[in-house]
Amino acid sequence: DVAEKMRTENQILNLANQFIEALHALENNDDSEAEPVAILFGDEAVLRNSALDHMGQEISGRDAILQFWIQYKAELGQCKSNFHHITTSERAAGLFWTTEGTSPGGQNVHYHGATLLEFDDSGLIKFFRGYYDTRELVVKADVGG
Image (cartoon, rainbow, N blue to C red; front, side, top):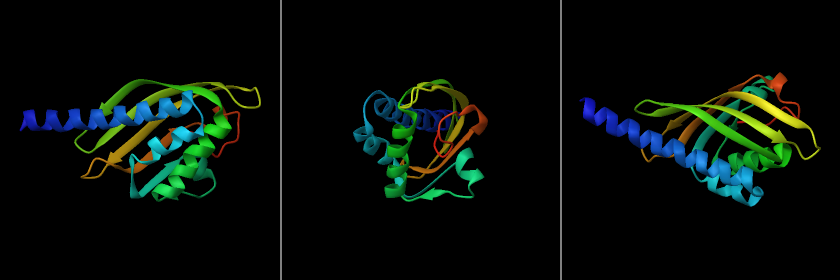
């Protein structure tokens, strides 16, 4: 039924916005804000992105995902992600973004891409997939949303 589908997609939009708010808190503060991002992931969650693909790796489990977000903050420094479009379905959200700012080494950072968030029945992220052109990322290429 259409009303139920819209309710579900609104719930997914709310979950996506929780992720965005937690990421912005991490970007605006220090790596102590990585935990609020990581707790949005399920215990068995999988995280993949373009840089990890180049290395033939993926990250799985909440503890490893927490370390990913700590490293993300350490390597991207004072960067901010602007989410300009969000799409939703009954179990997933697509986030379209541009990240820019200054790395800890003083380099300008500007890259853009899309992130897929797939949620489990309890509303936790079970699969995270970041798509972007690693050539746009001038800092170490093993991070990025």
